[in-house]
Amino acid sequence: MIIIGIAGGTGSGKTVLASKLLGRIGNDCAAAIPHDAYYKDLTHLSEAERAAANFDHPDSLETDLLITHLDQLRAGNAIGCPEYDFAHHTRLPSARSIPPSNIIIIVEGILVLSSEDLRSRCDVKLFVDTSADIRLSRRLQRDVAERGRSVESVLRQWQETAQPMHERFVEPTRLFADLIVSGEKDIEVAVSMIADAVGGLEGQA
Image 1: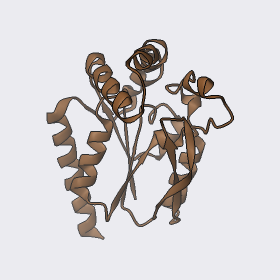
Image 2 (image 1 turned 180 degrees about the horizontal axis):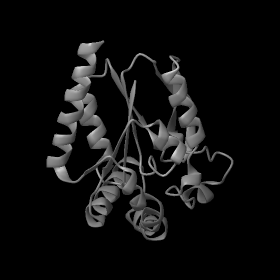
Image 3 (image 1 turned 60 degrees about the vertical axis):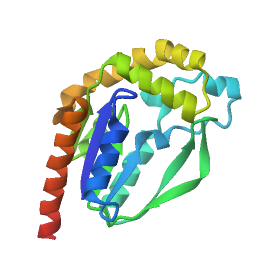
Image 4 (image 1 turned 180 degrees about the vertical axis):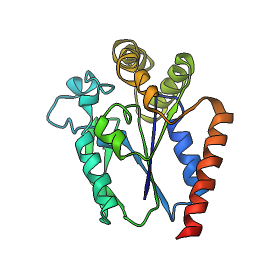
């Protein structure tokens, strides 16, 4: 099993890269696990307290559980990947079953490379490098359209936590990447390289 870690700032294109990889490799031998599915459950807090939480800090994620799940997959056991309700900041009671038969596990999230223990589980580490202006534009569109946020709340969160946390925790992790991906052309090249390598592994199986 090969674990590919994809990091980069919010709105950088990590999910696009992961989706393209899945499309090329095929869902029958690959699975994607979003790090943000492992956000801690904030059911015990009021809605106002949840909205004010810092979701761009490493402490907001249950990374130890993700690491445990990756170890279980490598050991040949299925896992139940959490599902998160981003509109209400709570973890859903359901879980997505991921079998251990996949050759490729893609883990993507802004803080995937910030944890040394998580990094050590990744056989290939990618960092998607995108300008702050583009990332803010994408985050604004996503959070308003998909997560029920107001424009004002998204901009406030960007200024107070998202960008400061990016500079503190995310940007420095580009030093741990095996490959830095910048722009659509780089994404296509990275997808082709990894898909070709996986094709070679399948041929050896």
